Length: 496
Image (tube, rainbow, N blue to C red; front, top):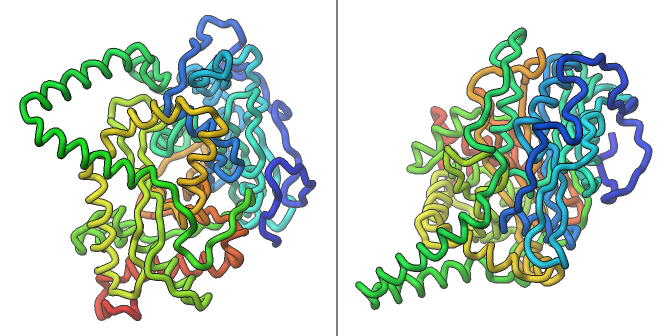
């Protein structure tokens, strides 16, 4: 099977799948018609936060496109009418599912979310049947092709495709724009669509508050002066300390925002708008144990496995490298935050990739990430986003192109369900995320599901010329980490 190599927006016929349908085949049900324009539950317009606005506007550079894809593998096709009813109800609970992005007047300020007057559920919910032999590779190729197609800006920025003909099972491809929601928020939304048992159709729970996303600008305007007043009072009490803190904060902000001239990798250098997907599973409990027993966390063990895999990929290409530049999305989401919108900070780190014992790789990652988490930059990201969002769109795209285009890789970790869950009568067997490279060569995402770590790999084939070799190297990296504490396993550079 050929790998997905379509250009963004190119509509090339494919033998992968056939029979795309929207309303075809469904019968009207309790909610099947979906919400109508002008109905009493039509969501109110709302402003887009500065961070979400940046994700939307920086796509003037197509390499920085922020389309997020996810893949759910099911044991059977979901019940079409139940699924459609669930999404119709969800579109009432989560306003952005029925809202489009509109630009600000005169192009000044942030875009806004506005309810579309002709929301059509049957555009966003589709189903196809694989025309090939029904393999996961075919589904991944289809998912990559859909991810490369730009989202229609005149419609709400999400699509959901049911894929039938995957062996005896099925799959669901979810696609949405990062400006609407981040990974953890998306998992919270998806959780509202899932059931704890196959034959139980759990009603969606009403979220506390409007669930519309970022706080209104009026609230932000109230908080900013109060924060400035508090800072002024602290400065008056201890001017020397305040000057030191301010200089330290500026140093961290400089590290976060400094432009990058070129990748650290001698191999992963070219960039394009093409994508290839790969997926595999690892033992989540053993990955967590490896992190804990090395003085780190599950996330530290995950990043270390990616680092080891990338080191091996470079060695196989005869180009060993001592360091690679990584973007690590650090979540600042609180339990009471609504699902919509983004609550993460993309932190850039230079991580060591020289040969060293596996445990030492985890320790090095843990130390580097902890320094960033404890530094002052994370607390300043809202103010930075507000300032950057004032830039004209062409300038904004150039600024973020200089920051992101030469990152070597991204590592994304999203917690998922810990117990079996069902979607409209179909059991979910695996849940994979394909987060956008956003200028990097590769994005490796971990979604935890039950006792499995579902690994989704999103590669730019202009940088990764051998996706099979990259996938194999990453598998070896995870094997090295999960085998760390196996009886008789040596912890040496060769094993690492």
